[in-house]
Image 1: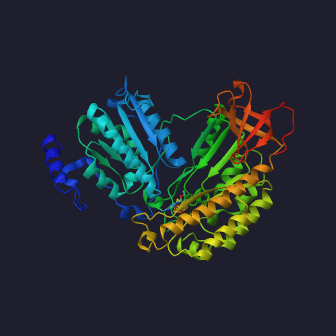
Image 2: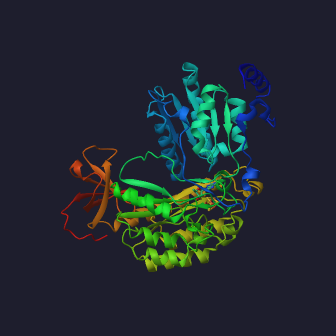
Image 3: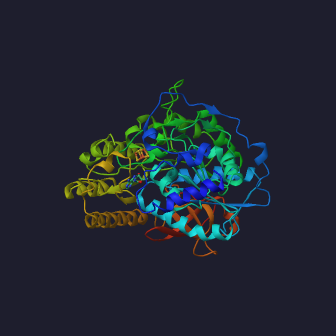
Length: 512
Ligand code: 5AD
Ligand code: SF4
């Protein structure tokens, strides 16, 4: 699009700002416009996933960033955090340096989250804050990527109201960042490239990891569960598993480089391997192999109870580097609500799974996600959630008010639980969850725990902070040389959300 066309488009847009736009903007963007479509994203084709091993930066972009800086602001889940590590790797492969100062940046990316409306509102707030920077420095490139870019309504809103954005690209287009950036820089067009259908698995993308102690490892992408409230299957595409040998090599590489903890990542990690046609291999098998790698701690997230099989429970029971913390989102304690959510398990099935896990992993710390105020949720059904929380005895819980997401089946149901009722239920649930979290902490009093030391405490640089295998935050005094190491700490003081302690001799036996 040239300057004339851009002016023409802005004029068209300005004259219809308040109207809900159903306009087709594609003619203004010619070849640089690939719009998203939630309807297309829903389709699950039978086509095989190709594995690509020869990613490279185009020759003319290899030094484009020399002397320039990039900044990525990340919203949402660990998958997004890890995508940011990949995009940082791509920027650095083009010669860019990282910065945290928006005034210094030559490129700013917002890696966005679409899971709930308030996540989206935060991003639109931030987009507003960036406008003055662009006015001050017209050469600044501003891009929007991540889950929100996969939604037509978001892309249309940016096209209508935020003309200063230079590029929008989706979760399947990350490897195209150099090409998209080039278009944005040299053509002075707003570049929109969002594939609704997922692409191949690209194996050798560069990564710059945040820190050198804990690392994320993707084991699969996408989700086929289609829980009725959830936008993820649309924004992240169909389930695609990485080959076990590629995952194991990445974990070995991290172990060789001194990493102490890895988290295996996927939207629904328990479906790992289902799409690998040439082998009968699941998450349990993968964990059983990773268990033998010399890395002290292995976690995985996020689990879906329906696909959590006996093989995985058995492997987790072997312990070792497989930690005793399992995040197992339940969403609701009522079988009827679970049915409306299309979670494909009942309260009884979930409780049976919890029993199996507790039998196999006696000290297991369980945490969960819960949504309150789903359409039609009655007081009795909410009370079933409360009783399930008591029965399982979660040590931590992420609680959310239901937020309708355009394009999902639940968004067509009447959102009929009044907001005051939703808020009141959330408060009651949080009170219970906090009480249980505080109780779970009490059992640590006087115990010796293993802590992976991550760095200085946020509130006091004289104190170090780290986490137990069960993900409890521990603060203690120790020399800075302990950072990055696994140390033993005797707990002296128990708080609601953290533990205080003293570092002790290497030879002491860990009691928890
Ligand atoms: N409204 C509220 N919470 C949601 N979650 C996912 N979609 C929605 C929604 N539409 C919650 C679920 C999920 C967590 C990551 O976010 O609890 O497990
Ligand atoms: Fe969303 Fe359900 Fe998939 Fe989790 S399993 S990402 S909640 S659709």
